[in-house]
Image (cartoon, rainbow, N blue to C red; front, top):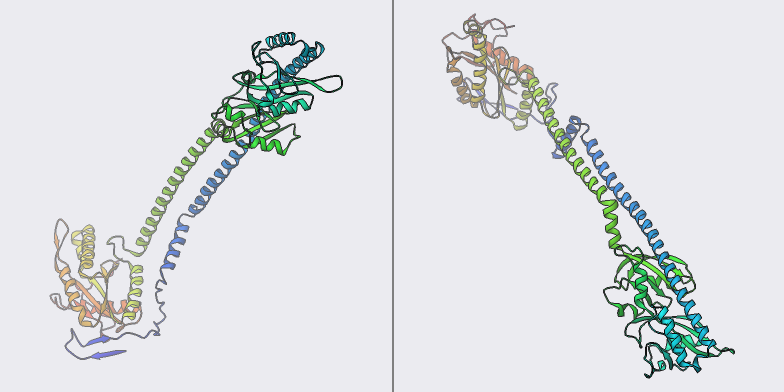
Length: 569
């Protein structure tokens, strides 16, 4: 593996190093481990971070758990409060609808009693034979019942016999010829008793009325005539307006044939669109699905308002009618939001924002703490591996760097030069100029040595005035010459301490790896042995300040008193 090469060398024959085999034993030394990849480096950094701030990820998990729990609680609270608000609203609607049903029932009972009494009077006085008296009786009934639009006496053939809406002497209409009115009257003639007809734009009056009739029969059950007393549509609106109706609330009466009997307020589509067509919304659908239900709840699309509404209905006992009350869903949602959700949600958002801000502050403190811990750890590592006075590697740092340099030398097939440098008569400098000046000399020399070497080389201070140089990447011994020349130039310049210029002399011994030794301790020892040999030179021998290790050097050199100072404590 070592092949001597004869030629013009520097201070002796030059030896070119070809490297050691990969299976070469290092004399018991442990080879440094190289990184196995970027993934391993990231894993090591993550584990180091966990060790530095052990609570950081627990805090993160706790924060996000709290956020998730808060959001879940908010959803559950919102759902529960909405269900509770909707139940309370349905109860209020049911109370209002019950009031509407009771008011309409009382009003219809009063109208039915009056109409039945009038029919009995007409039957007892032979109304068909005395039309003038019948007319006076009908006008008297209308006078005491202002809600009645007109009173008519109609023959079974559909011919109007008497009407308070038509002045005396004027011709009276024949309702059989009215296709919109006659079907309802014909059904009433076939079934004796009270009948409530769907709203219509009165043929004898110019406004909307709700038909109310009673069929009068003779002793043998044959129909004698039909008495009608249509009620003004506005009358039911007035009844509804006396109820405590809240904003957005709609109340009304729906017939069992899905026609609207009355409603307040009138929707935007107008009264004709409301009363003239059959209703197909959710209320009519619910009523058809539950025709025997006394009361119920519905929610869905209402055809009259063309919007989604919540409502309830109550059957009006004794009549084919159902009272209802409904409100827009948007109104309920807005009221629920203002009364039960807005303030808690604002508080929740504020709490989340504050907790997020606090979490970020804690994270920032954790990162600052982590950086501070890393800085302190790095400082401790520097204190362990570096000399506090000069900032150079100390003995422990030297051996760590030396083992890595030896590994690189073996891998790249290059020489590694280990230089042992000692300041001549450093004790005299301390004695003459003081220890502060001696510290200045050491720090200045450390800076000069670092500046004279390459970026891949290392300088270490073993203690006192002893320094070690690690010079890597040499192909042959002769490559060391220019580097040593730079080191010598850095040492020759006097050092200024502010009060004096102090000249410095030094001795340098060099050993090569792997030519002179295969382990770190032996390299340091043989470089030290060469340095002792350099100290034996004469005082004015400036060229002999450096020696390369040679096995023939004396094992225990005895330098003169001027060249080798006594050991320092």
